[in-house]
Length: 78
Image (cartoon, rainbow, N blue to C red; front, side):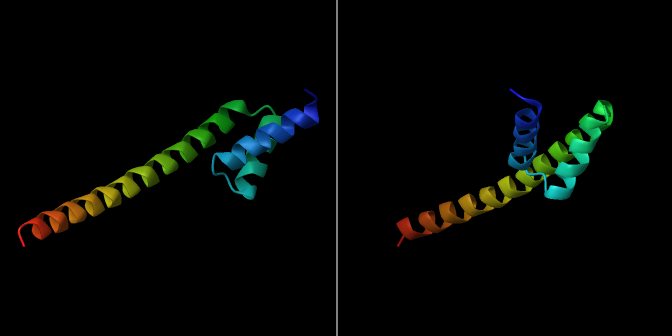
């Protein structure tokens, strides 16, 4: 794989991981400047943000599941 192919694959991975263009550009610059520890720190922060979002959405799903359960339960008594 050539450098440009590797760079394109890396950039696509950042996009697939939910990084916006600004984040992707900054992270690519860090990698190109051999600031790997800094890059890993930023990627870890992004991962935490995604995980927080996941937990928030999971709570919403749990609430919806409970609502559906209660409505179905009410419907069986009628």
